[in-house]
Amino acid sequence: MYTHELINLFKTFSDKELMKFGKFLNSPYFNNRKQLSRLYRVLRKFHPNYEGIRFTKENLFKLIYGNIKFNDSTFRNLMSDLLLQAMQFVKQEGIEDNEIESSFYLTQELFNRECYGLFRTKMGKTMKSLDERGTFDSNYFFSRYKVETDSFYVNLLTQKVLKKKYVISESERLIEGIVCILNYFFIETIKHNDNLLQYSRSYNVQDNVSTVSEFLEIFNFDKLIKYIRKNPVTNIPVVEVFYNLLQAFTHIEDEKHYFEFKKSLFQCSKNLGITDNNFLHLRLIGYCIQKMNLGLHSSFNLNEEIFELYKVYTQNEFYKTETSKFLPFDTYRNVLLNSILVKKLSYMENFIRNFSNKLLPEHISGVENYSYALLNFEKKAFDKALNYLNRIKFDQFVFKLDMKNLQLKINYELNHLETAISTIDSYRHFLKNNVLISESRREMHNNFANYTGQLIQYKLGSKRINLPFISHKVEMSKKIFDKVWLKDKLKELMSPTKMKRA
Image 1: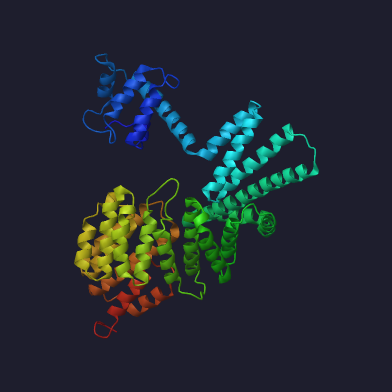
Image 2: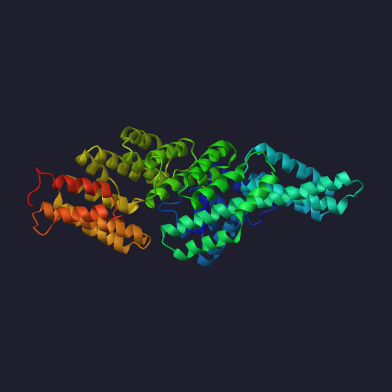
């Protein structure tokens, strides 16, 4: 099948966008080459899949040029030129869709052309649009900074100073611009450093962890937040949410900061953009997870808290971002696992029914089957769980490690011991060969596979397996995946009715 970057871009076009691109292409202002319009019309016939036995370079060339002999270089150049036009169209659409950003292109041109009256009119409309949005995120503060500072310098250049009152009002405008850029800096700094920290910990990149610590030490965020509080540009305390986030994670043992973070977020949530709601609500959940991972004391049930936070997160669709409307599979997976931990299987079943269709379409079938396999495993309907698991195409499944783990547990529970041994072998090979798995995660899964293997050998009659010793090692270790299940299986084997030897 023929592939090209132009085809990948066209696949993202809706029918309406493709029709608009045709009008764009037919405009002499943007394009005066008939071959590009012909290529567009030919490609449009194959939308949206761009596949089939007729979708070849040679056939596309023939549809454009007739009986002229195929020339690969000519065709490649034509495709590349149409790709440039398509990217120009995407850029044009993006500019038109982003009213605030596009207004700054216009005001810059008006300034360059010394049309100061039009400049002020447009800036006034931009400021009104910003306020009407009612969303106070880092983009709002950066745009407000541009409005205030650009207006100040245009007035400085063009207006006569006749009264002190005017000087004071213009000074306040510049101060607001400064505070806005500090708001922007504060929010973006905390957000991206936090993302870098989580990303680096996931893949065990210690140098990045140190980089974040060094960066945060450079700035006195306590003084910065005090300055912003003294000079607020809005009565919505959005920056306080990010400050409380910073406090919660830098003083993780003091839970008052977590509750301040949670309270301020819930109060401001309706005034946050979708990106910030996504980020901040995930960090609330992340606080609870990190506290559990560190083994720190908590005055509240962390798993129950996570359960409630995920309900807020999913029901309000805070998983959506500006680049994706789909529920991420790792979030979906975490809700399933958390529902199991807090023994909310009815909620889990409803969640699968209501939210599996929110995933990327190509993931839905595999994920639904995995979800019902997991649900039935928890209900101890092991045959049914295995049936669901066998419907999944392993190569197309997003979380292969989860599938290996569940496959091993199901075969153990069904006493399919030889199959379980084979599963352990493929489990280990997958862990060894997958470079994207962090070392800590690899170790936890390897330990799980190894201990499960020992339990299988015991069930097969091995005399070398010392269950009390294994139980002690499992109890003491902090690096075992699915530790609760392992402990339950050990307890079963060591019960007086099943214990075969001392």
